[in-house]
Image (cartoon, rainbow, N blue to C red; front, side, top):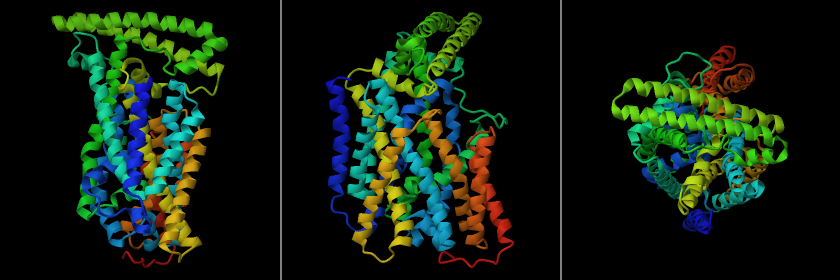
Length: 567
């Protein structure tokens, strides 16, 4: 990055943060600070919901997922539109009718205090971890690739987002997210067209898709019934729907976004905006990754995309092995490129037989390049067991830094930070709100003034921000970042969803039965997670079903509970 890139990066990030703080200055009322002005229109709600969910991990890691595995990850979101419709029809009217600050406040009205605290506690646990990953994810990659100090990257970006979140509350989050998501869309679309322009002369967009399809990168739907397969249409529609129901319907970081709506209609339209555009957005980002894969068939990529780790080991004892593997990789890649060129030329000439022969040879050469990459990862891991050998998170940022013009590099790096800021601001705002309303005001200090609770919320938001920064400073992930985030959510979300579904639809179930059922179901999910090898999306279904089933069983041994105010 040069001076122009840094100017673009800092200009975009600082201007959005300062504008958000200026527009929302002077908010001292608890309702406006936590829930916003209740004047937010549907378009802002829709963008805010999308921005909170689409973190830097989405835009940094998802293209790498597309590069490695193709479009199959999009199945993860097939259940989201159905879930958002259910939330708009069932969940949202209840939240607005009871005029709650948090989703877990409803559990206290419907069940009892201990169930409310359990729901809030599960949210704080998994979202607190998630907030740490949200800041760690872009920092670890950007600091490694760009040579920045990791600790300074984490602390500086973390403190900036904590500062404007605390200063402006929910309205500041909504307002800044609208502009941050705008920067993100502009940056990603720009990257898409620049990528197309950088493909070899004479290679059409159709040719690029042909190459991607020939290497099985365009297989978006998998009908396999194998439970070990992470992404199939069944895990996506069923597991994905339960994940989306819990995330968008019970996670305070999302609930708080659409409770700011000027009316029920505005909030519903904001959710429908996401129901329509969520899958296309993810499809586009994965397609961008698949096209980066095509680009690197004609431009030799690094044998290992985390070049900082690779060069360090080259200079510290493993250089001979790594250089030899790099040479094998380069030889196989050159052969693969030659066969792909022959494949495309044969297709243009209408010679299907020659095209298929060349494609088979290209696939064989690809096996050799992947073997060299696999062996390289093994050498790096043997030299340093702490090395994260999954380098897919480094694919897109490597392409940006190596092949985009200056100025645009700054814009795309701003995209990653804008996405990190928007999602982290929403998470911290929700963590502070939940801690204040469901724990501090409910247990510690019941009858204080609004100004007192606003101050408390600011302190709790700051505290959670520091916790997230601390977690990020000591974090280490083996998974691809986008998958790690979804795995953490799936371990907890199913049980939380089960609690809410019992609350909404089964009035005969009481708080005591739900409380113990949820604890047992969460324990079961954790046992399964550490002992079974199944797609993590199934944990959403298992956790929800176990919680509801155990709730019915336990209630049969307890007196019938007469529901609270919500009935």
